[in-house]
Length: 250
Length: 88
Image (cartoon, rainbow over all chains, first blue to last red; front, side, top):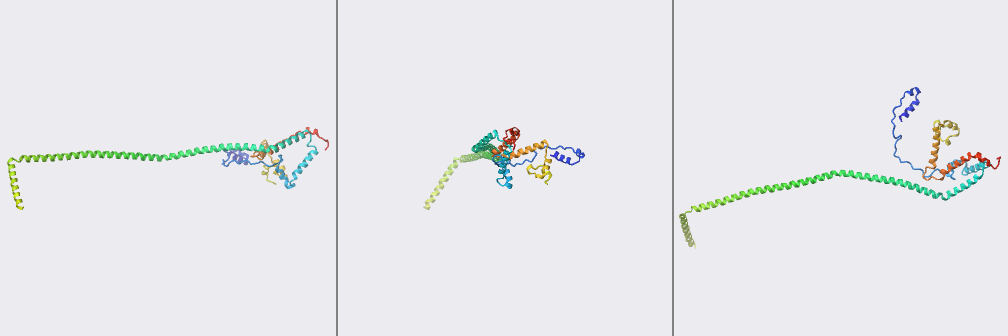
């Protein structure tokens, strides 16, 4: 691209100056023109119009303003008359074979042209449909792949949620474990403390009972038989006095 | 008078009668130019009558007619012995 610009400018200058210009290293691009995503235009539906199979319609349109509709036919008639009369076109055996061949061709085209055209159109449409279907199936196939890929990406995003859920699960299990063990510790400690409490209670009770028994036994021991008689006689006397008193009141 | 630079690229049918010598002078007669002219004509004819979705008989019948007429011209010297009259 640049070399062409330099060649243009080299031509404009005088030859002496042009020799001094050196060809710069032109970068060769892979694509010569802009890549445009415009789709290729469709082929036209039908070709140019042709009358009688050999004369293009443009000829008739060209003569229409000058001679009207019959102009080209008069021209053709005059031309044929001239050719025949001056014998530029010579009638011989080949003329007869030409007439037969042309008649055969015209008859064949008129009778079977339609069927051939339909058959060819059907074949063309089938080819185009095959290619279109291949293209469409490929597009849907790739689209499915794209959707699957997107779904996989979405799944990867979901990993964070799974991770946090699992972390919550683990935390809950740990906490329940801790609570269990705390309860166990509490129960064990309570058991041990209860044991000591019971021990103390037992000790105190035994001490009390022992003391009472010991005091009682000592007291009973100190009561001599003399004191016993005296106390019994004192009791009898008191009882007598009480009886007298009660008899008196009654 | 049409612009000289545009004249060379015009088609022959579009050239006015007065400019015809100029057109012949300006035309490219190098092998590449001649080949280019043939290619252009070929492309024009094919794109108009054959490279269509529903081309038909006129596409090739015109070529065959031209072939028939040209071949008649080349064998006229042999055919003229079959003349019916000598003086026309």
